Length: 421
Image (cartoon, rainbow, N blue to C red):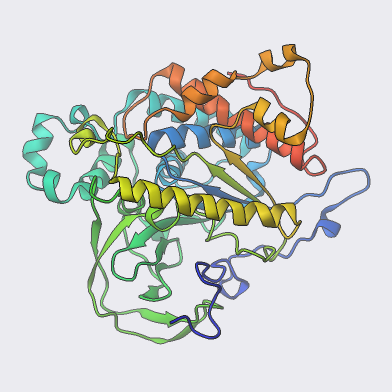
């Protein structure tokens, strides 16, 4: 039963409330507007799941933001699965710091491109015969823990969650098998409002990220041992600690954050409510379509494919659709300033919805509709993609971001920027 003072169903209270000291000073549109200049708002980012495909798409989205010097304005990042993989690599390339725009363009983006096009993360080739002997039964029973080790060894993801920077606040979303709620990791806490929260998360970053990507029945749950002390029951509406608690489990299984919600929106946005302080909320959705019936194979993981049970794919797709509609309803009603970048949407699609006409030759400057569909159709996997596939998918993210921002939020983002390799 939902507490009387609890959050709306399906929406936990904002984890970035001022009580926790993670917010910058309040900024409003009026305060941020100077004569003749568009308003300047902090940016909150939600980066969806979708395996390596999602990582490449989000890399392109970040490139578009960096081209306009906007990465410095990011105050919150919420990630699921492929989004978590990308940010873990990004942070590792930058000594566990969020890169500025110039650093991202000059160093981080090229490093991400090299990583995502040359290094398999979880395939038979990545594990190898020695790995099969080394990991033994874990390959059959605890593949998510194997993924965590491969993140360290193959991607260089190091450090612990508690050592993450406080700005931007990064929320790594997983799903608790114990409570059925969204279990989050951040620099200052881990847990959920049903199980309880702990304010000193001494967990490997690679473990948190692997849990965020642990597709049910493919990678399986990642199990972590929990500290016995330091747990607090929190108010579901305010997130304030209410009393010490002793959880009834000292070990917990965590699934892919996409089981609960693949967009990662809940950590940075509450339906029907504007962020406090004012912020521009961006949701980058690189989710793939529901696979064709009968296309999944239980052995696909050894080729890097993350093909879950069909029931999971259908349910996840429906949850994502409902969440995105709620978000866009609030954007259209001007309850929240924000944008949705949806993979598979071409420039022509945006124009049709907007009722805008272009000379056909203008579309030559963008990916064509067939290339956009090819980007969307890239498998959800943990395998290095070809340079051509990375270029196509990252460019798609860049172009969708640019067109949506300049079309629907031109007062905030008036300048069109074209893709440069």
